[in-house]
Length: 425
Image (cartoon, rainbow, N blue to C red; front, side):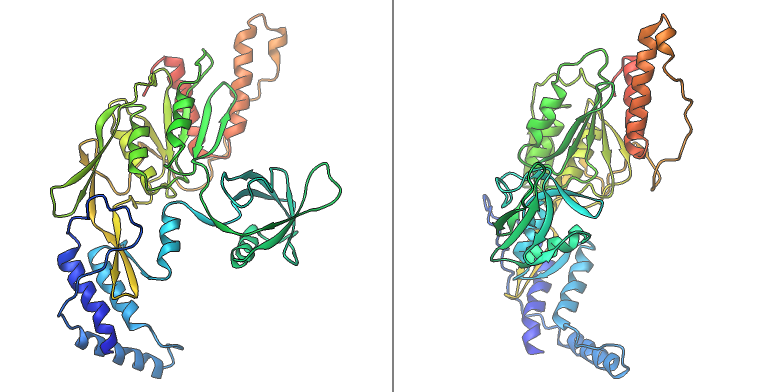
């Protein structure tokens, strides 16, 4: 028990006195800073926990010894930051990578259909780049055939093969299977998950995260030549994360240019980091709606707040965000643990960052209601007012495309209304 007092005492002093300390200027290291030593002794509390553990074990309610250090660390952290987390120091690098949007594996996007796993995308710089391609169907991983096996299980097998694994796929147009020896690695998906031009010219841009490549993709979509049939842009942040506040500010600046869109300030200090976006792109020509939800977190959450508050505000549709902006830093405790606790405050467009960000139009959870729409047929062939009928056909095709996504459906309706009124949000 004496060995436990070191980490816990260090954490006590860190959270009480050190959490508000200024971070080292220019320090970009991923290694967590070490906590200061302390003379505080939590021995009475440890003894109480030990007795409680023994009583639970005697009553048959605990099958294995509980880790008292982890219990105490979690208690201290949650008292300071309800969303703070505790990790063993050996687990920290993987946790930090996941916070940045990375994943450990082959770096592919797949769909599961008819008991098969089909590749639909390959991440740049991933182990699969140059070896797999869209359309490939997974046949075998190592000595296991994978037809009918969920992709989550296959990912687990791949991640465990740290020294490499043979992946066998079937490729359209070839009779023989293709075997590739690949070693899983940490990799991050591209910022853009997909860009689709839907009926009527409306663009639907889905982001994986706010990091390198996001600004260029959104800027290109906004500056695409607009026509009389172009309804606007749907920026989908529902599965987006990231930790790049500079990229979030640059994206927000595409709508509302300003040198100080985001400010991050260490708690208890006057020093602040300022991020701005001063793009002069002609964005006002294209109306935009952003989709948010519980999967919107990190820098994407900050972006949503900036879009909502900007001078050329973007309407937010969906559900509240995760409430997890990038305001936490790691602190090493006792050489064994890392705690990830809140150390910063965020101002967005001159006001405190809301947590979570709430949409302007909040939708209930679940699929959209099934609303019957009248079928007009193809009467335009007998109708001299041919242009109106063609537009009706486009609207009907667009309705079919978005009918299973309530938030996308609402965004489309808004943009069509804005186009009809020749207004913008």
